[in-house]
Image 1 (cartoon, rainbow, N blue to C red):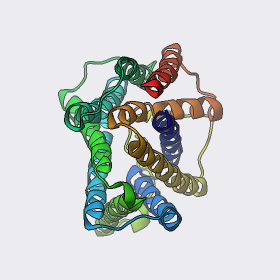
Image 2 (image 1 turned 90 degrees about the vertical axis):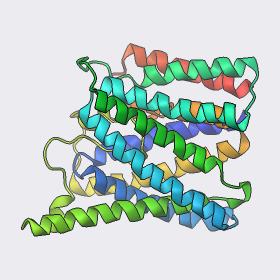
Image 3 (image 1 turned 180 degrees about the vertical axis):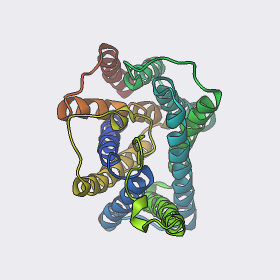
Length: 317
């Protein structure tokens, strides 16, 4: 029951991080938001790590570095598939794949065993993921095969992140998350630096790479697939100073969600945690409804209800 509760809370926090990052990406480029979030999350985890404790071993550090690399790959694939669209298809597809991949790993490879109500809960959770992540109102078009392939790749990479983190030892504390965030920070800051150098060579100021150029596609620094609120105009305007603040808060929220996810993994089954973590769009949707006064579609309310039902079923498993 504790593991399911932690995973559900973590999903809501993940969604909150996506919401903050999406607002920041209205003024800052996606990669810049990602880099800032990685660094602020790293600082937050580094400050908490001594309080939590944990043994630094070569294996856990290596798993953390690998998780950081996979996380960056997930974000890159995610942005690419969302740019191709249609988002109403690729967004829930990514979320479902990100749940199914570690779920199958947990059940078939790790040997996770659940009570019958638990397996039913997994099925309900997958339906909830699709309904909550569905983007109503978008014109349905024939999906691009390349976009679908990238959506599946992004989902697999997100699922792989969960599988990798699950390999770390129980006495490592937050060490894997610290090294993972440090790795993603180095990679994303390096990308921003390369973009700045390229801008200088074109005769443009280096700072020009920091802001959005053209229609914003939105950002999801935590590597998830619910970006519709970032790409649509809302009632809230975002100043440059607020955008930087939001990016920092996004990283802190994402780090907190990672910590909750890690604790859930260490107290429960990978299959359960992956299914509930994939419900992260719920947090984004609820915040968008409260802060931006966006309308929550009936189908999404159904998905939220099923998400709660799935959480209760999995808690009893």
